[in-house]
Length: 416
Image (cartoon, rainbow, N blue to C red; front, side, top):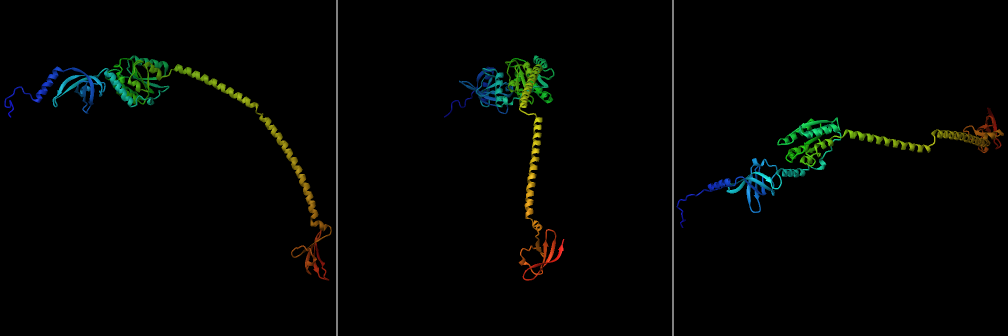
């Protein structure tokens, strides 16, 4: 079947590219510089640095892109589910013929971009543990040198110097002047901290400024400054703004002071108060020492009442020794006398039993000359046997003579 108008020339026919281009031009004119509110979803950030997301509400959605040059000025990080207000132009992506919005600025809906950025940074740093109390270092009690990182011409540095000089006149103060407000302030504060650490004279560093708006204090909410404080080797005191002002630097520092003047009072002790305290402690120590000595002296007196004079004890011991010595001598003499009497009786008994005493009564002892055997029986004698006779005085040798069966003795030779 032939199609109608198949061979007829048509006028006003557009190509796809022409149609998309026409739509793009219309949109560029009619939808330029639009503010649109919606919720972010499907957020992705490829290596190119561009931000691609979908902007939606309860009725519709549109693709959106924020190129790297525009999003580099963002003070916060866009996230899925975040309510935002964006500014840009609705365009058609020609290669796909899809509608998208090219965003050149963005701010959170219902809260300021700066405040949101601060809250986001707080959450990230808290998750890293940079606010934990365990990592806070104690401040030196008596610093010899205090480093100060702040603006040179402000009232804050003047108040700190005056306060420290009044409290501790001999303290050394090193001031590293930096800008504390503006785009260049974070880098200068980081450099100031690094310079004081590298110099190495400071025992503690105070970093801060006077009060101001949240924008004025924003340098102390900068991630570079906060991480430099966290990484410092020297204890850091943060003194930013007035008492009601809080920055992230206050949270990560080792100590937070409500004001710069309060920081000066924290880092150095009051010499007058120390002198008063020292006098009080000295008086307390002296009194305690005196009371202790008095108690010890009373204890010694009490003990002395129960202790005898060692000289008396020594004299008593000497007398006891003399007494025992005399008793020992008397006992020894008695013992000697008794032993002498016993010995005399034993000697008398021995004398009575001695064969020599028998000899004195006219008896003699007969022995064989050959072997000295005592002769007790005459029948044991042999004729012509030589005998030795022992008398009370002297000896004689005899020989046995035979005859009549009776044994007689023949005198041979007396000996003296």
